[in-house]
Length: 151
Image (cartoon, rainbow, N blue to C red; front, side, top):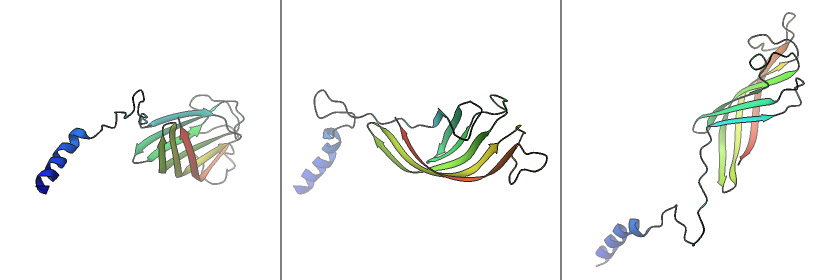
């Protein structure tokens, strides 16, 4: 008899189980699950820039929390104005993510390189100290710890 009751409970459990989209109270809806954010574009400013252009960041999520990120004013791509500007190129990894009804919080770490331009921009990156020919920019490694909140 216990065997039959157990089998009946197992067979009936999918039928009586509440679906995640259903609400147990009248007039209320469950919180929506946030959509996965694979492409993130941000605009802002930086104290390292004096070109008067906004800093543009593009963050592309690749797979399993890994993403590629690039930030800068778009020197030599969007505009060609000389001036002080810093650009970042890095890979990041999300090691902690918390979803709430108000948004998604993320803690990320990453590494890459940054280029500081103080004069005329030349193609490519000059790692190390500026030489006598190209004193306009210098590039070097960087590491980052980020906290993000996306609504």
